[in-house]
Image (cartoon, rainbow, N blue to C red; front, side):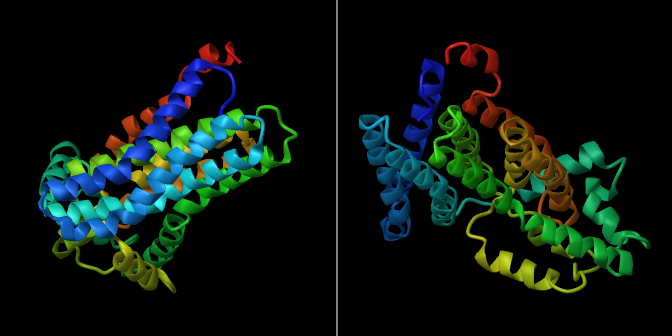
Length: 313
């Protein structure tokens, strides 16, 4: 997809291999765990993984045509929700215990001097100024909650923008930009999903709900949004914070390829990062763990070796 350059081609091939093996790996994990009854739930992921590989082969056979490449990019974008759902099936089927107590303990050890038990959300909960029982606190909660749900908007917005540029065929670098973003964005998601399985945690809003004195009510839609998120949460998706990592990856890539969009995405990344802890979805250690995930995504997209790869274009 990315045109000349062996390193870029290798990274995109790695993305296809990872996405293409994810669904089958989930199915095999269930079979090995004697949960064949759950395999049917990951069949959409298996089918999508195979479709990605087939479409990649088609695109390679027709390198001068945009249609196959556009379809491949759309299939890779679809991997984000579909493979996330498969991850949830695997975690539930394996019945692995949550490790929230350990994550809470890490926060308490390193940030206990700054926040109660190391949790900024507990400090906000007990604050007479910013607490959710105050008017200012309700405004802040409402603002954070709306910011939090824009998470997917920024990534898919940039994907659509790059797809449109590539489809118009006016920018000679559009193919390369699209491929680099897909590697960084989808690639980081895939790593994130594997970590969800290895370090399953649900977040303080569930695991430590009894530690908070006040519910997060907001002004208007906070309760509805939180209940909708809880009803559709298919996986303990706490460690590391995908909201933080993928928001920053999107912002960094956008600043390079679409600076105007990137400035808005950067502001959103900052606010989403604050919202993840302020709304009790994540521990501070989740945010720290998001940093290497950002670096993995940027490496996968080739953003950490720009000079080397651009010299081969």
